[in-house]
Image (cartoon, rainbow, N blue to C red; front, side):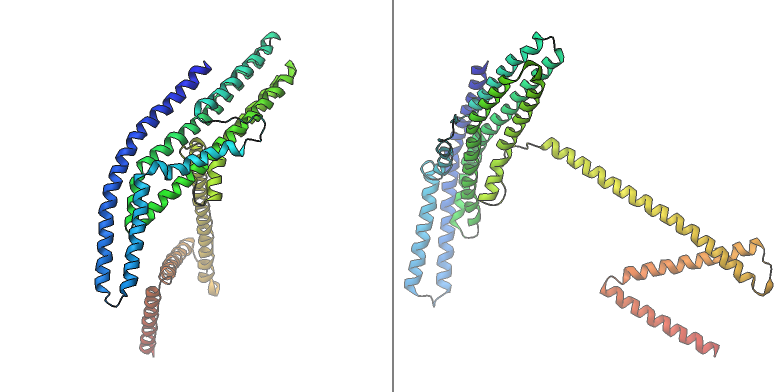
Length: 392
């Protein structure tokens, strides 16, 4: 079982690597043709600038041309000799992982996803064997928990193996398919694309180094797991199962998260993340965030409605009292109908004034609105003066 699973993963990686090798030849061909075209454009632009700038020194102009040809030659060499230049950046970082971990006890030199899966399968088998004690003591629930623990370990190391497969295959597809981006170094307007490609080589190589370093350290870690697990009494295997699940989660998190953080901290920018490891968690968080936002919006609307109802009640009561006081002046005894009529009229006038004030406040937010308010105020002042003249 272990040998077949390991072999299948390694065969899958080998098939993809063979296919990406065919991509490389075409990408180099396209990149070379594109580079030649852009290089001619770049040299032509340099010549036009030289003709337009007649005051430029001839010696300085020739030096600039030589620099341009040297620069173009370097990038042409990088495109046509990718295996012996930029590919060495990634392979050198990958080779650095065993060197960094050579003094670590039981450090495992991992070069393919099958080895990672092999570690998980060995742990899976050992936990199932130890879980047989539950059956000896007739503990069916404990046996089920141990089986669940074994499968969690298998899934955790399977996820780490997939991470290795993604960095090996994904990086080759991206880098080999993107060789043509080096051709954009031929012009000063598109040079940033070639620079980003070279940065990607360093980012992928650095992530690969940390992945293999962390997985290699798991040799010591997993050996300790089994020793600790074997020392547990049969009746205490529940605690051992919980500990193994937690330790597996920690290792999986280190392998899938720490390399990206290392790239971000050491090189800058974002890590090269080939997999959405927490897509379910992110979706859950998004749904929870939307639900909370909706709750806040609904709560705000309810609060606004409650405040509006309370304000309406206060306004009606105040208008009723105002109408009663006004109509009762001089010892008069107004009827309920008269009070209601005056209160309704007062409420209508108040609503108009409130609406006008709201419109004025909206207008005052812009310069043109403030000008309009000034004009309205001037018109109101002029109208008041006319009304005063008529009365006089």
